[in-house]
Length: 103
Image: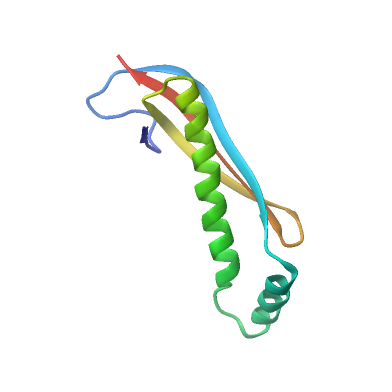
């Protein structure tokens, strides 16, 4: 499966199949929340949250690809990511794009 952020693939003609998406909501355990909260007092990267968001993007992307595969897509174009806080210590990651096949 070819994944691109552009709305085209150079040298390829595409037939668009429709939108595909994937999402997940992730949180860290209470111990990580407390340790990361203390880290904000001194500054620096909140590595546990960075790892959490990396994992969330990976899982959301996997779910989007699975939707594309169910449509027999060969590529997903115009991919976009969005994230938001749904509650303290929990974040949602959403990824979406357009499934396509090569003509």
